[in-house]
Length: 166
Image (cartoon, rainbow, N blue to C red):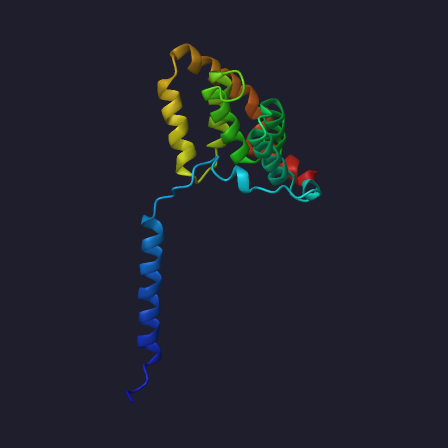
């Protein structure tokens, strides 16, 4: 039998193991797309009272799955009203692309901009930059005007205190 490891040696080994795990997680690229998990979502009835942003986000995705674009839009907007950046992002994508609802590029860009406001999700920022770059100057001007008016209702400094108060 060998001699037991010292506490110092064990600490160094644990530190190295943690660094290796952190490095492998950081280098892994997310492969999941935003709409891929819609079929697996189950919206718990009654959850809207405790987690309204999550509940309405889930309901919007279910409505999309069922082909009910108008209902999905309304549910995404309700979720966004609770500060849910995922809902803002999905709504922006749907409007920019015109998927299941009439295409409205300026409004879609405004939603994408709101979704990227505090997001740590690089995809949201990259999507905004890409969509913004592809838009015409007129579309960008219209999107900027919409974004400035929508900030009064959906910007973090407004929506988060409102959600906490509710």
